[in-house]
Image (cartoon, rainbow over all chains, first blue to last red; front, side, top):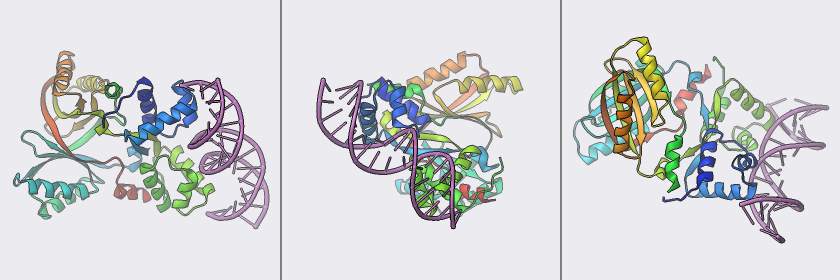
Length: 162
Length: 162
DNA sequence: GATGAAACTGCTCCAAG
DNA sequence: CTTGGAGCAGTTTCATC
């Protein structure tokens, strides 16, 4: 997926990240373009898959007091089939927001959300009993959300200008 | 922010998370409602702040080979002023996508993105030299993205039905 | 790239049931 | 909650420069 973009494309992406429901005529105005070429650029950005879709941002604060937990996971063995089984199980769990494989001593790092610690523990027990290859885990409870970017940073978007 | 929602509101949120640019008449059709009450519900969801906004989802894969890193950070001291200084510094860094304060032995967990490992190291050096209270850090490089949810899971949305 | 226009679709509000 | 409709705004395509 190698695409060449100019400053205006990047500006459009930056605006659309934050204001996904902006009208196309207003977007054109903001990037100093008339609606027609702006519309063509947008079509292109969507067609090549740079824009995967649009979505509403739901306020986490409105969901009440949820517990957010990072979980380090270590597997029983490092066979390719064991990795695959664990990853498949994790992807099927609603509570798991993210799962990353890491280099070094930790096999996986998971971001898990649950209504309470008890619910989190039930999730862990379910995983342990599911014969999914989970040998050991470490729990780190989030006590404060310091930063949680909801958009690709400007500096990274600039790297598309090649 | 205590709001009482019914199944239709939740269904609307679920749809809007994935299809933020859906037309309001189509949304009404999908939840078996006529446009007018659907429009009023949507107004309400936005007004109470449950929907913070809308945004385009940009494909990470299109940004080329970026390096994603989790960084554990330990501070020199645990004075409230030191926490505040570090958190402010972190929020100002474009590379830091997320920063969480954790209970237990780890002060902070950061998710950092950079074009390369070298760029990441430059970021760390900058933080260390910025006299921001960072005493020790551990680096965990992401080798695989197993799961990265882009929406609040259904089960959590259900908890709004109180 | 810009512009203007035409045909269409969707939006927002209003009235009435 | 429903339907229907009016007036307006935004979308998409087209032809022209």
